[in-house]
Image (cartoon, rainbow, N blue to C red; front, side):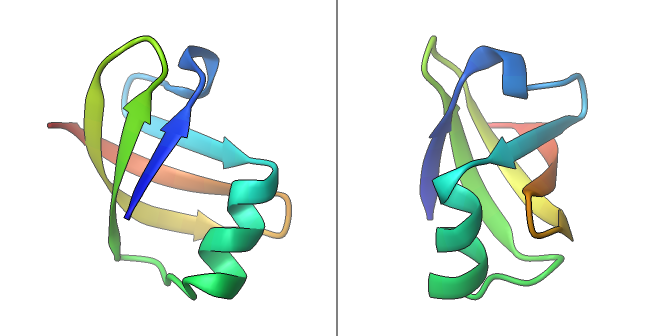
Amino acid sequence: YHFFVEPHQIGAEEIRIEGADVNHIRNVLRMKPGEEILISSREGGDYFCRVEELEPEYLLLYTSDA
């Protein structure tokens, strides 16, 4: 799966997903902690991530650069 985020959502080792994508990832794709996802910054840069936390308002992903 591939999602896009704003640059402010990307930290040194983690990415925080908020908004409508949270519902899609949790309830449509039914992803669980440990699963992998591709995240792209709208300003460039791709990150292969592992789902770490699935909260009702946000997801926390750990990154490794693509």
